[in-house]
Image (cartoon, rainbow, N blue to C red):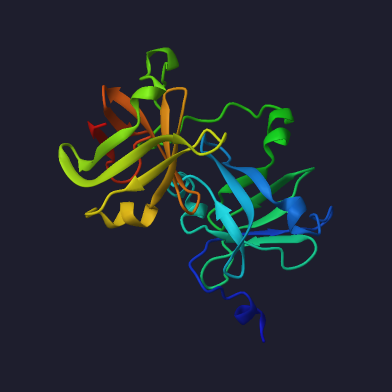
Length: 256
């Protein structure tokens, strides 16, 4: 079986290639798995990805917030990763083709340059904190949404969140109903979330929210596959996605 056929997965995954020269990458998946930060140099664009040990297609699951697909073009189709051999780590698309090739650049740090000249860094959170500060980066491109500052002291109390919400794609236009359940799931800080019957929005059904959490004024919905959407409160019982990327998403509380 040739290399192209070996790399062909069963599902839709995405694209990055980490190829190790000296020093070699760790030889086993457990050493590479976990959280990494991927950063587009020369910008403020940065996303946290998680190299999960869960099996998925030809390799293992790659998880990150849904907004990363828009913030970092290299992640638009991302979804899986594998270590085909010592010194290499790949994240592949549905055809097994690589979009980026990273090379080691210090401990727990990799660098890749695309064909269009963009440079990406992949680094562990701990190493990122210890790294020397780079020169001031230019302002983000016009039109790239930024997080809205939230004052946790003025945010709605956590006890007010459970209940049924109308989900809008446009102001006052209901497409689905979402229930935020009040009972915590063990000691994880997570609560059950579920779409109610009759949801007419294919995107929300595909996202399939499974749990929710509330931290420092931000409500986060987590999908079955690990993707996340974060919302902030605009007024009592009214929440909007933040940052505002992709289609409009608003929650309006309908009742307890």
